[in-house]
Amino acid sequence: MKLELEDFCVDEILGFELSGEGEHIFLHIEKRGLNTQDVIKILASKFALHPKHIAYSGLKDKQAVTRQWLSVWSPKELHSDTLETEGFKVLTQKRHISKLKRGAHRANSFEIIIRHLKHSEQIEKTIERIRLNGVPNYFGPQRFGRGGKNLDKARDLFERIHTLGKRVKLDRQQRSIYLSAARSFLFNEVLSTRVKQENWDSVLSGEAIMLAGSNSYFTSKGLAVEEEQALPNRLAEFDIHPSAPLWGKGDLATVEEALTLETDALKTHLALQQGLEVMGLKQQRRATRLIAEDLTHEFLADDVLKLRFNLVKGTFATSVLRELVTITL
Image (cartoon, rainbow, N blue to C red; front, side, top):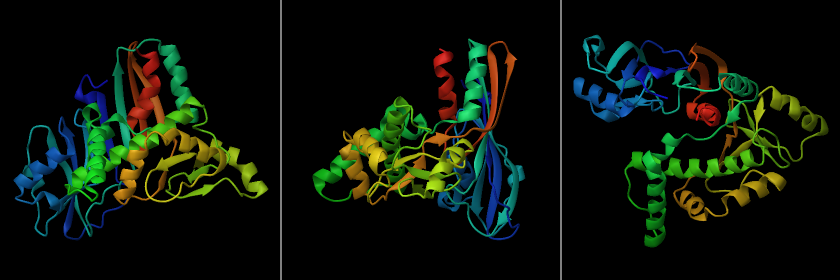
């Protein structure tokens, strides 16, 4: 993977219309071999702006060709057509009444090339299984930093808080990165347990069931008979998904079998749980199943596979690609 920049292409799907007026200029940019923060630094320098006036919805890979949206607070016009920097260009710009907020985009579209494959017939079967059943919705390794350093930093932060008995001053961006790493790790632990038990894509007794495309959920316990009987069909149609916790203050949403599974999976990680609670995060849920929408594939050569698919925001292409790992080694 990623032997060439063009092997991993991402296009951010904004999902809403721009008004064409206002003090914020939305820039649709294409970058190659740069991360999102690199581009923000270039724009801030080029237009003599403070980086805080440049906003993004999602971070995009460095070792890739990616298209995404940024917003710049600027009452005056920006002549982005004159910006020529190696690895980065502005495709289009349009004004909008408000800044771009984190997580505001709807989805990401991927086009990925994997080289030097083996057992293409088995891969064909695996891709069809992914298309029909989805994949475990793991947080990808980029969430944890190189060598898992973000998770290590989170543990260090929580230990200092516990030792000092008070909160530790921390840069806002660093705080977000470390807390996200800790939360993601705990979610992955529960999901990994469900994968081993082969119930990551099925409804357990006492399950907190997510509504597709939403942060809302309901508990399977106490449903009317007809509602309970409808669950298998709704699950098969991807209308609902099982879930696992994004840790924070408050009680788990699950009961019975699902609650026991989550409690057992996390019982050796109490320090991370307590640290997230002290930092003020609240209990939330995330689906354990990820659907690769509009998944297509083609072999460009006997050992070169191209995949195309869309993923909702906040999910990872690596969760799809990991399903091919054991048959490509």
